[in-house]
Image 1 (tube, rainbow, N blue to C red):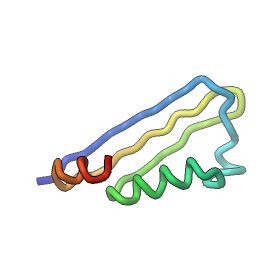
Image 2: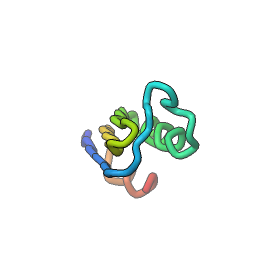
Image 3: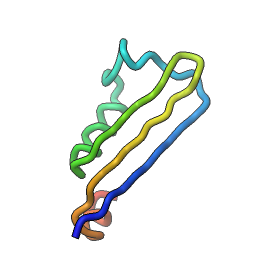
Image 4: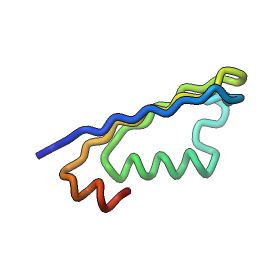
Length: 70
């Protein structure tokens, strides 16, 4: 049985230029690795002065996967 997880996190903070520093921060690297571990995709929309929006879609094999990775 397969389930899909969709998550979106947004803020209205200072934002950043995604094209000039796409995966340089430790937080972004960690998020990418965790999303990859559930065979997922991550999309980041950000711009200086406009905040940041991060979208994640992941495919979960069973509820036990959620318990183990949470």
